[in-house]
Length: 464
Image (cartoon, rainbow, N blue to C red; front, top):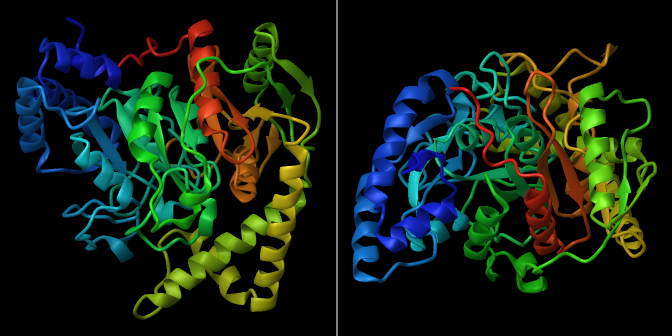
């Protein structure tokens, strides 16, 4: 039989159902693989001591024919800014290194109730506010495809774990592209859902307001759908969830009007990424979708200004709420907090008013276009301990130069998905993203399944 560590979640569950494999055996295989690979990758930074007991309980349920869900017994990991009862939640910062929550955040509680087996926590940058994964508490996380390089961030530990076969499923968060960009760097699938699609409560302070969502990371579209079915029922504690239609995935997506945005103004894009994503756009057109290349339907400077004001103010508010008003370790975050403290209430209110106007305009845009397609990231992975690439395509860039394509979806309240496309000449993963109107999460899953059927990626594995 194929190594259980290399099987998607839905295939593991099918073996559990057929009694060809037990959750205990699957966990034992994963434990062996984690012991071998995690010291190199540093993807998992805290282990769940209850995993063995959870696997044993799942095995008993499958033997009795009483599984709690279709994914009962399947292992999953949790990003270290999502609370798991009894496990440290450092948030990548020494300021939270001793924090051990007493309750699960709602998505974690739902997966426990569905019988899934928690593996532990995955690494993040400090306060999940940077596009790589390193911090002074747990150290640097490395990309399974080239361990000298980063898997991106802030869900870098999550995507590294899934890409390396350290568990088929992960929960990440995406506040400005923090699922989609790392997914593209690791060759996996990552969804940033519509606000409210995966209800949240009992978590850390929301320093990015409703721009940040918990989302699934997986190896296949089928795994993504199976996980979403467990995570998406509405909950009154997250009122945004009550306004959405029930999660459903079309059997086949309709032929869609897609605007392909290859570049944002003068921002450079790695030539291999440009070529791979352009080929993906042509492939979508060959499937019958109407794909037109055009500029983005918004002003990038406006998006950057709104996003900056929210992030700066949110970090300053968090730090000022802690005893002694401490500072982050990372110097860029110190500067970010200082900018937030200097921002007036009137300026923040102005940014929030601009955000409301931007969201209205994006709603109007999606009345005539179904989806926006872009590269998920502007740069290939760079050295693991560096916060960002200093240049792209020979042009100098700043700290967010690699991340220009993703934050517009968070600000708009739109869902987005990253899907693998053709890798670089050196074998590094490349991904494109699709962004659509509020509530299009199920449509994205159907698009992911269609794309995977014609351009399969799940059997690509790094040589670890």
